[in-house]
Amino acid sequence: MPETRALRLGIAGPVGTGKSSLIALLCRELGGTIELGVVTNDIYTDEDARMLRAAGVLDPDRIRAVETGACPHTAIRDDITANAIAIEDLESDYPATELVLIESGGDNLTATFSPALVDAQIFVLDVAGGGDVVRKGGPGIARADLLVVNKTDLAPHVGVDADRMRREGEQAREGRPVIALSRNDADSIAALTSWVRHLLARHRHGEHVATDPGPMAPHFHADGTVHAH
Amino acid sequence: MSGIAALLLADARLPAGGHTQSAGLEPALLGGLEPTDIPGFLRTRLATSARVDAATAVVTRAGAPVEQVLDAWAARTPSEVVRAAAVEAGRGYLRLARTLGMPTSLLPRDTPRPIALGSLARDLGLAAAEVARVAIYDDLQTACAAALKLAPMDPATPVGWLLACADPIDEAVADVAKLTEPQQIPATTAPLMELWQHAHSTATRRLFRA
Image (tube, rainbow over all chains, first blue to last red; front, side, top):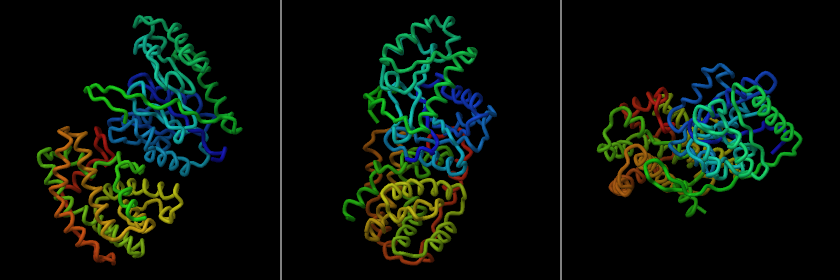
């Protein structure tokens, strides 16, 4: 892979933790200086792409939606074809693209991106999901390139200690970075954008190597079925 | 080569993005088709669009000029939405061919599924009947697999539906396998199915691309 190719950054994490908002935030903060593209993976409809287009943070044509046929894990993990084509099309239509953000279809704690699809990945949790989620672990929490503990401004309202959640995240990750993020906290936003810029610089210099957070464990779905996709 | 190649092309695990497709079943169910009518839906596809696509793949494999095959296929696939969905499905095959260094990768980016499949069959040395059978089987099995997500049932049930189509599939394979010219591709369309699929691009709640 040539180092001039755009950096592909995956955003994974459970439903409702703020993946789309995180992407909108990155578009808002970085769009002025970095050429961006976005690929969304909705489990059900292209709602996320619509939301991002409506947010007006990026040219709507640079936001592509992939429907995954109810297989959000497959689409980012084993058969990445639909996503790879969407990214390749974006890069072909906008050759100056420097950073492509790929949003996974939010599912549960076990889905992570294949390193064949993304160069790096952010795993997003939020305080409203409960302070114990970090301790439950999983490949994304433990080994994604970055763990974001989102919506820290809500912590007092949902009875969660955001600092403790961040600390436990750091313990679970054996030193890999954790950012406690709130869109009302400028310092946390600066930490996030700085992390992305640093990653992009490392990618450009050929210093970043994509790593696999690990295979998924068998998991439960709400309907009681168990499978490992 | 062709022995394993035909199986590979018919395998849902082939990494070509097949899991994003429902072969028109989701649009049909959203359009009002009852799950109990899915066996009839399969027979309809076999008699219409699946037959057109299988013939298109066969003629492509036979070496007919791709532009002429494309025109013949497009004339028999009037909805631009359905054609666009077929192009997306075709991209999966083209990407596979590119990674594996096959001549099919040189086809234009907007090559629809049946032509990409026919070309891949040519690269892999499949016989005409084999590619016809793969094209039809993949179409019907895609709908059967999607049925389990859209209207869950005992997963053995759709297997029975498919087996019930075995003889008509063999007849369709025999019919189209001997074709070599684009103008010989049958013009059997299913207007209601096309109408359902045509509406799918603007459906706000959907699991499958097409």
